[in-house]
Length: 282
Image (cartoon, rainbow, N blue to C red; front, side):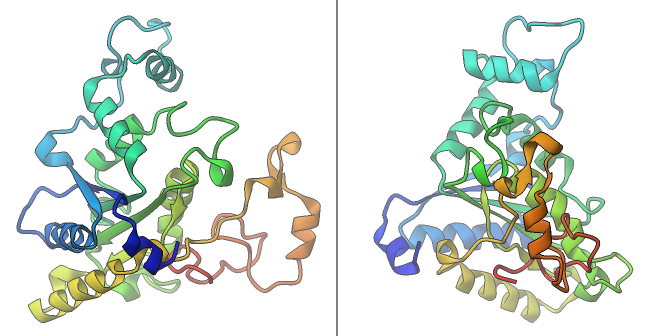
């Protein structure tokens, strides 16, 4: 979708899933900037402020109203699928699923890798509980053929470390590797077109002027956000489902002479493709 087309649409809906405990945080400022800019562009913006909502982080049998099918051997995925089909998920999950169903774009505004190189527990709990089997994915509908293939999603987050520390030679390791489980294993798995992440590098360690520049860059990016190309992931039909979803020989052969692998996770024994999880079209 081009930026011009986006501007003409008045029905674009954006869901911001926000997880930070302080209204004075940089993350809060980034969230507020997103609401302001996107609303000014005519979008309808909803914010799920998880801490303010006291959103339950743990995925348990309490997420189902009424009796479960097998209380003696409770399987969360299967039981919540049945509950979703029967309309027996708890109200907090149902409400978030409504927001997600209506959204064209989902922005996960969080504060990580301060939380052990991933999202905070309350955000992970949102993903665990809201993205239920049946609603967000099935065995047949996942990755490039996923249920949310017509929706876009992205991570927007701060780091506690400098950018250099998240490089291939940095002490924290390559940020592309850190992002792979979240962007491929959760967002792309559910079919989302994953936009390049918005990374605010170590805002707590830079002057206020630099933080202001970061926010202005975010504001500028949002002007054409839905017109951006998504990150590249290997389509599901490149894998042989009858042979354990291994890359098909003809696809493997096509890339045999190339310097880099396909993606961070599917690298064919080659060097990881640079910035594969951070920039589109790389």
